[in-house]
Image (cartoon, rainbow, N blue to C red; front, side, top):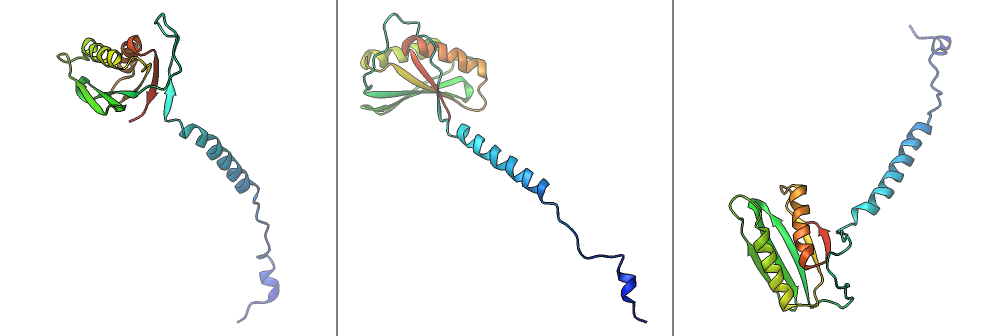
Length: 151
């Protein structure tokens, strides 16, 4: 028993595919990707506020670059690169950050390299925001130009 052509007339194989919603999604996704790529390139953020020092910042190229890393277990690591390559470790004061020892070490570096005016601060993921800000304040006392960097 074969089906007559009139029984298939209710099942039409012609249909219109509406591509407008799919194209709308792609346009939004492309715009989102284009906008977000401009923010992904930020490696160092200049967090400089008006310097507390009385002298103006000099525009000379420093002989060393100073990076201060806030590590786990309340430890600082000062990295010098450029004319001198070395690392200075500052241990914890009990169960807290030793900002006094950090300032002493940074003062020694500033005395040895007076042209250095800036430092980059980076922190481990486990370090709290308040601790980063208080460390920035300590570093800013010696080096007025403070920038935030990532590990």
